[in-house]
Length: 508
Image 1 (tube, helix red, strand yellow):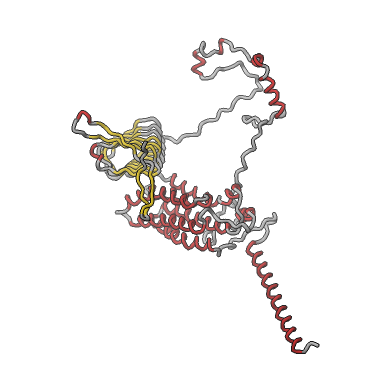
Image 2: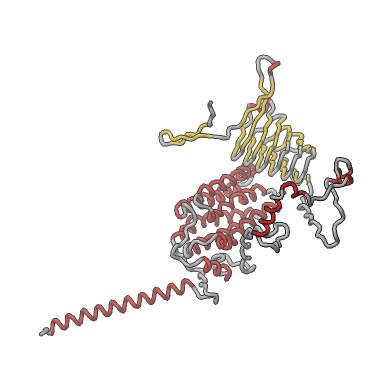
């Protein structure tokens, strides 16, 4: 028989097991309730809406705030000190930061979406990026245009969320693009206002820290949660307005973002591409009739109409002038082709605003500017086939988004810059300290004898760049202009732990 002590020991073990089971059951119920609270309530369509605070304590979100937010706040503070359009643009950058923070939070709770779903999820970020670019485009005459351009070029780095498998190099490329304009800001304001110097440091720090964050947490692309909720839940959350913006930034009153564009139409060989109307005949029958006609041989042309002499262009010069031959009158019920008008072009404009000459939207014309002060600048934008002559000495010239244009100037105090252009030629009659060429295909620089030994040429993402200059020899009869290409290809090797880059030369 079992002793009383054995029974008491058995009872204690049963009591401990029962208590443990109760604790496990209680903990399981607590975790289930917490999960339901984090997911949120259903919106009635079967999809759960992700609450605004779900996933906010994840390491990816917390590190994003710790690494990027301090520099965003510093940049916004300095932008507000400068004021005007710079402060207005900074508000878009702040909203973009908040939108991306919430996007990273949602990614940690959601499975990887399709491209169509992703395009809807990033709409809040795209809206702020476009807003910052629009502010720059609408304020070209502003004295802060270089500040606005710095942000407009660099803000695209926040688009890393759609780049894989190399988002970090993409961010670095956008940072380099921003530095082209930030260098201008430094040259103009370094001796005038230190606020702009600190402003440049703050904005570039945002891009630097953003690259460091992405390298640490999203090396090959944005990290999603394979075991998370369906992407439709995140879309429902955005439509419900719970995941757009953080607690620090109120949501916009514009409502839910518009739906993504429909997918491209499926190709149908039996549908006319011009009318979009399906043929009444079946596909195989139509193709069979076509091959049957081809097999007729010479009789296949029996149904063609004979061209009358009055319709022959070689006998009627007036028809050649018109470009098209008018056939016989068409029936009243036949459809006429629809001619679409070309997109309206902006009117050409050349004006002096403060100390800045604005030359934009010109075609094949010859223009002349006479500078009256050395602090004046010239900004040439969106011109095609234009020749611009600048007389007298002035501060600088900028050529932006131009094609097949030529600029001739006497002398510059600072620099001549070319960006986003094609087939551009510039000529310095006297001196120019620096020439910067960025994102340009085809540029030819003509230097005078004075500028030949005192000009530095800086290129970035440029191709087909050549420089011509006078070359003196002992025999004056042999003196002429020499044309030299700017190197485009480089080779880098690692020596003693350091990267050594030299010009790549072809030998054969």
